[in-house]
Image 1 (cartoon, helix red, strand yellow):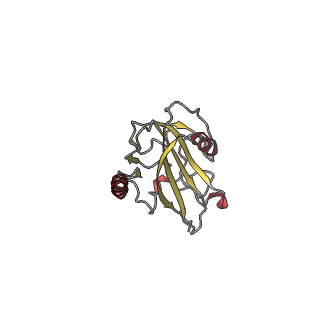
Image 2 (image 1 turned 120 degrees about the horizontal axis):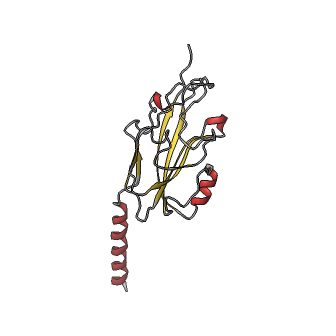
Image 3 (image 1 turned 120 degrees about the vertical axis):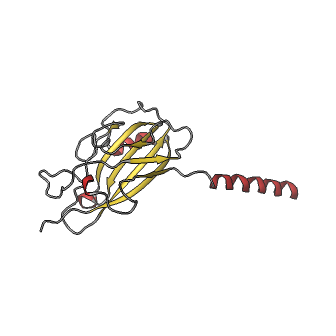
Length: 187
């Protein structure tokens, strides 16, 4: 019996160590370093909002080591500090085919390569950061969710909360990164 328990322990330990060496699902961008500032061009375009000083150019995003059985991805970009702490959703994208490993610069701004959900501005594409013109640094979370849903499984126009509800039981793993953005203060 003691020998059987020792054998089971060794098997369990070897399985655990194999799992520990599995490659991690990651999301990154050559346009910014995690925890650092987004490029100013990623900010929202000037218009009626004085906080917008960018060109609304979405950053290039790339990922690797998705879990087995991934059929599509969903991507959410959010500023949890926006709207005085109520949060601002800058992008809700899903239906990204599992064969996709990157979204080129401007693809999210132009609505390319995904099914668009509705962001806080009511559009189906990337809207760049426009935090208030103060010294307050806002942080933007980029969350990529691997799912077992076919790319065509969900209709366009879902809000963030609706998407998350529909992904329950279908999310396989998530990868993420965070970047800061600070509005330019007029002199």
